Amino acid sequence: MKTPVALLLAGASLLTGCVLPGPGNGGQPQRTYTLQAPAAAGEAERRWPCVTLRIARPDAAPGFSTARMAYTDTAHRLDYFAYNAWVAMPPAMVAAATETYLAASGRFGAVISGSADVRSDYRLDAGGIRLVQRVDGQASSVIFESRVRVVDVESRRLLASRAFRYEEPAAAANPEAGVAAANRAFARYLDDLAAFLDTAFAPQACPG
Image (cartoon, rainbow, N blue to C red; front, top):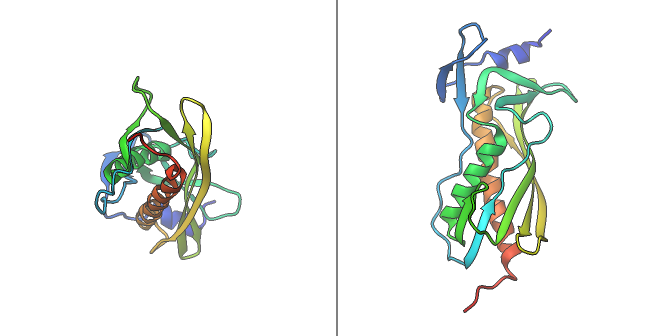
């Protein structure tokens, strides 16, 4: 039987997002939400204009290969909110937002994604994407995790790797507050990822 907290969360009213009919949910509206890159603070100096960086499609941690919004209120158990979902699986949102953010930063000559037949010098791989809202009574927080590595495409040499983990407090124990906290955690991740790439690429130099 669902706990009172779980029932409250599943039926919480959200103020933003798209409202779509949800198949198989008895006519209840399906609300969808996005994980987005924050607006660029301003283009940085183009430190590596000779480098094309490819953003590979990230892999999800087990249980997160779905657009359903995950939460946990019991140790070792993963549940999903009813009638609330992301617009896409977290890895897809992470890849798109990472490309947008790094392209806007101006660090590289080009930032691309996918498997199009375009030459790239380095590849940014991410794995173990985990995005979950943790609920403890009336308290709530969102956890975002990712493991990244930078690979030299031609030599297949590992340039650098790092694990990232963030826990961001949510204003309430409902999906809407979780979405806001998730976007704050993701913004922190992107800032730290950019700094990580600055360090990883610091020894590299473009001709001339």
